[in-house]
Amino acid sequence: MSKYDIIIIGSGLGGLQCGYILSKRGYKVLILERQAQPGGCMQSYRRHGENLDTGMHYVGGLGVGDCLYSSFKYMGLMELPWVHLEPSGFDRVTIGGRTFSYAEGHEAFVNTLAKDFPSQRAGLENYAKTMKEVGNHLFDAIMPRDVTDFFTTSLFGASTYEYLHTTFSDELLINVLSGSSLKMELAQETLPLYNFAQANNSFVQGSYRLKGDGNLIVYKLLDSIKAFGGELICNAEVEELIEKDGKLVAARCGNGETYEADLFISNAHPAVTCDLVKESEKMKKVYRNRIHRLENTYGMYTVSLVLKPGQLKYFNWNQYIYVKPNVWNYFQEDGPVSGLLISCRVPDNAELQNGFVTNDPDARILDILTPLPWEKICQWEHTTVGHRGEDYKAYKERLADECIALAEQFIPGLHNMVEARYSSTPLTYRDYTLTPNGSSYGVRKDYHNPMMTLLSAKTPIPNLLLTGQSLTLHGLLGVTMTSLFTVAEIIGKEEAWKITQTE
Ligand SMILES: Cc1cc2nc3c(=O)[nH]c(=O)nc-3n(C[C@H](O)[C@H](O)[C@H](O)COP(=O)(O)OP(=O)(O)OC[C@H]3O[C@@H](n4cnc5c(N)ncnc54)[C@H](O)[C@@H]3O)c2cc1C
Image 1: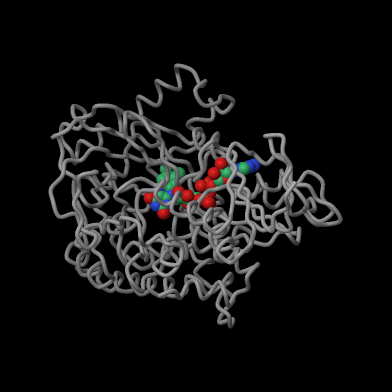
Image 2 (image 1 turned 90 degrees about the vertical axis):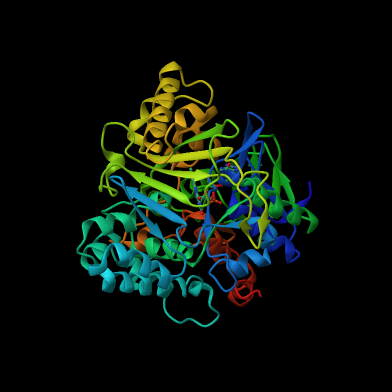
């Protein structure tokens, strides 16, 4: 049995990014993935002759000097075919029939919304300043010299909801500013201002989607990992992490194999990771209980529509639609879907110049997403993929019909344009990635108690580290940040920091 320097459990974005950095630096890396396919929430799947996305629709901060540029450049991800979303309105939020645009660049963002809400200009300027300040400190935790204690910065302890309500007096504007935030869980009681401002800052810097699917990211990282000498084994669910004399020594997998290493990184959800360490001197009950008590963010319902040719032109922005200005709680209410995001895939025949689409291609794939709290689907929690029964299928179809009906506010006649449709729920994510309750964005952060809900990469076991969206922040932005925090524990802060300064 060959021994590895580092075993990574899970090939989600976090696992792959850690694998990339560490194998590039000469470590002998093995990634173990439970699924047949790598990528976790980044993976795409094939139906109706098309690759359909799961958890990758758009990302911010890829312009030169912006927050993700250097790290993505280092990992080769800037070589992918990124399409720059419409700068005059990359996100458009329709509430009660009125549409508002988010423009790219902090100044343009303020000026555009101030046209609709002139009395709120000062608040908009304050918000833009807050976003910038937070964005400028994305990687502070790995700065070689300590500036502030990253995990105690005040914005982790500040409430998004309260900040918006003290900064703005116009309830509609508060809804507009929150309305593109289906890409995070808008939880009134818990969402820290840090997470809201950091994620939004990256999108205001500039928003991008891929010409192609999420697998482009997965295989770009994976091909490099293999070229650096790293390995990936799929269909290898880690069932136990074996500890000896206070350190992990091996991962025992469901494929009957046991793999040894000096160091282990878990990209699985932290609660799943704790359960993998069945016997331990180091991981005490108090740590396990703390991790198991953490709540998780909501999961998402997605319906991917394959459109008939010649029906709809590609549109280069994200369209959010809400029936009413109740953006913070519409998903908890009963009744038909009343808020959603429509994301249009860049068509295969789109021609690109400097990252912009220059022709006028037909749209082929639309994804419609809406939050789906666990309580609405937990009646099927004891079922597995493909065996959930007719009532579940009917429920999914009903949600698809409701999403299409609401999307018709923006695309009249959408129903008749659809050639095929495929949907997923949080149960799908739970069963593929093992994330508790199919949560889309991992552990819920709570401004009341940031230190309890923000997780360090370190665990009580000295050679077991965590990585992935549950630690600090989710999404491509948050996972990249967290990957750097994790590898900094191995290669040192100075070396990790250099990655964030790549030119
Ligand atoms: C519907 C949806 C839409 C989204 N849209 C966007 C978006 O547009 N932009 C954006 O930035 N973010 C988006 N996100 C969020 C983003 O996809 C995630 O934050 C990110 O992909 C999470 O990566 P991760 O590495 O933390 O974990 P995951 O992707 O959850 O990966 C964990 C991996 O570990 C594996 N694993 C678990 N247990 C084991 C085990 N015991 N043994 C072996 N392997 C194991 C899993 O199979 C999985 O492959 C979206 C998410 C969802 C769900």
